[in-house]
Structures are given as C-alpha cells and as structure tokens.
Amino acid sequence: MVRRGKPAPESTRGRRIEAGGFTVTEGVHRHGAELPWHDHATPTICFVLNGAFTELWRGGSIACTSSTLKITPAGERHWDRFNRGDVRGLLIEADQEQVAAIRPYSAVLDERESFHGGLLSTIGWRVHQEMQQMDSTAPLAIEGLLLELVATASRLKDQNGSERGRPRWLEEARDRIHADLGSRPSLSSLAWWVGVHPVTLARAFRQAFGCTVGEYVRNLRIERAALQLAQTELSLAEIALAAGFSDQSHFSNLFRQHTGLSPSRFRQVINGGTNGKK
Image (cartoon, rainbow, N blue to C red; front, side, top):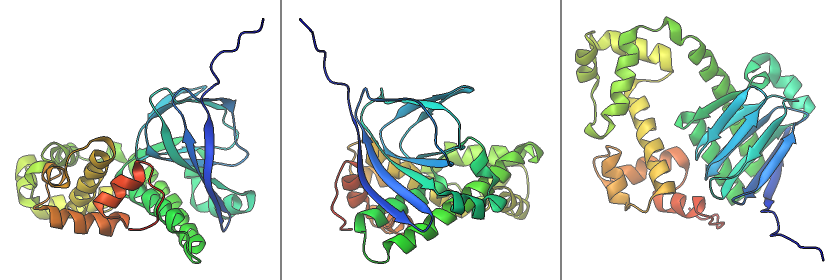
C-alpha cells in the first residue's frame, strides 16, 4: 500500500505583464512552500507586497518582509523558504537587451542588494497599482517606474557606500528622527540635539540622504503607516496618530499622494483585493 502525504503547498502565478524590456509577475506563495536551489539568466528584482519569507544563498541569508525590495544578480543560486505565512510579491525581470542598455548606469544589478521601505517601496507600490488598474497606458507607466526604481536603487547603493565618511552627528540626527517620529521632530530641535547649526544640518542631510529633513520624515511616516495598514487592524485615526500626522485627513491626503491609493484601499489591496478602484 502506498501512503500519500499532504500535497506540498503551492506557489501560484497571478497577473503578468510585459513593459518595454521588463516582465513583471505577481506571485502568491503559500505557507510551507519552497523554491529549491535555482537561478535566473538575468538579474531579478523582488518586491514583497505582503508576508515574510527567508532567502538563502551560498554566502548567507536574508529575511524579507512587507515592503522589502531585493536584487539578485544573474546566475546566483538561491533557495526561498516561505515558512512565515502566505506571501504575495512582484518578480521583476529584465531581458538581455534591457540589461545591456542600463548596466553602464546601474552596477547595482550585478550585486546582491536589499532595501526596505522609503522611496523604493513607494515606487514598488505604484507599479503594483498600475498592474491592478491596467488601462492602455499602464505598460508605459510601469516601464518608466521600473527605470526609476533601478536608478533610485543605484543611487541609494552609492549613498550607502559613502556612509563611512559621514560625521557621527549626522547619523545621530537620523537615529533621532526614527526614535521620535511620533513627536514631530523639527530641524532646529534636531540641530540643537546634535550640536550643529540648522543650516549645517540641512545641507549635510540633503547631501547624504538625497532629500530634505522634512521629506525624509514624511517618507518615513508613510512607510510606518503602510506597515501598520498591512500588519495590524488599527483604525486609520490610530495609525495616523502613531505615525506623527496631525490628523486623519492630513494622513489620508499625503498617503494617496505617495502611493496612489487611499489608506483604506491600500489595506484592501494588500490583503488580497483585486479591484482596481482607488
């Protein structure tokens, strides 16, 4: 008698579109599924929409969670284990011609890199929204967003590579922003805290992080709110307050500007909604 165990959890492919030299596939990986050792002929980019999983390669491992974006070089063997609940994400692949065209400007594609939240997360969600909407102009919009995504990742990699040359007080200012986000830190209070003039802080911050202190704070608030929308059942008012927004209306308006979705629609989409309405 042959005994048959439970069928292995599945990984399923959802919407798939081609945009210029890119192919974007939305996938769902059920809890317990695995993608054993494999590689890709060209560099790949993965953006996690919801859930968490672990990826292993010969040199280490990474825990990927909601809003993580990772880049895997061509030919690098890796193993994905979906042992932390169901996962939804986007797999972005570029054909050989596209890779050859952008490689001179994006060495980031040839190295293993990972990012969490921030501007890259915003671009990833905009790509997903265009896939949900999928009107006649969506492929053009998605191609532009993906080129912007690669350029932004390359710029962030360059900035991260220069961290050693940053003054300690600048790192302390950034850490203070993260710690006191709910209390609405100001430029003058941050400058006082780290012992420099506000003009000095403003200039150094923009040079190091590619944005003003105010823009950094705003992006971080949106990122934290997005994570709470995805991972908790808190009300919009509670999420807005925890992220440091003055009120729910202000939060909703800024969130829509950054992601293209209202907070309630974002929560619906990330929890498996397929309707393209905003």
